[in-house]
Image (tube, helix red, strand yellow):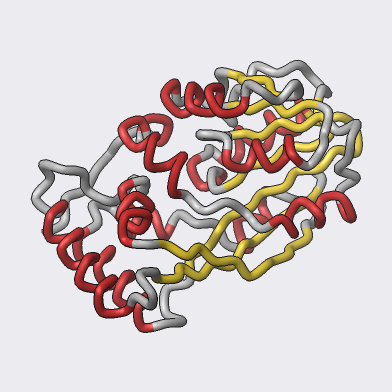
Length: 258
């Protein structure tokens, strides 16, 4: 049984914040090193991390040594989680704003990033806003952890489970951008880079990882128990030493807008 949902993008994760913060995969450290080598990222950099969520990528930017990160997030619950975990960093600035209206000043940042978030934006309006807040010569970096769906028997079974019991899984999966959208967003051309990445999880973490996904039904939904019963069986069948591995390809798209 599949039930569609029309939850606004900015509200989809409100009731999933704790699991999102605890169990979503981080990004490979090679992504930050790439920014140092190719995008002039360094100690003087001011960054707008748009759609920052609970601050997973924001924290990596801050630990990377830049001067300031404006964590722009419209969801109150997710923004509050980032504030709780990142307030110790002197360069952290929490901003109640959206990709299409960040509230930041004109020409105030060297770099705009969006990690696992751009597919929720209105791309045309976000492009206009990013161009407004970027300093001349500034960069945009868009990145995703793209889960592999067929490289191991466990990942094949996981994909089958999500398609069978997810609420709007197929629509959300189809929203992940391809090169055609990147060509539209970066009219001057763009670069692309990717890194292999993985997440090794016990069953509790695996369950939390999928409770953080907007297309996975929560308790009370008719698909909730069937999905997690199937997930438990898949875990038991494929675990090694009490763990399974989720494989990702971390993909980066980067370019200038003006």
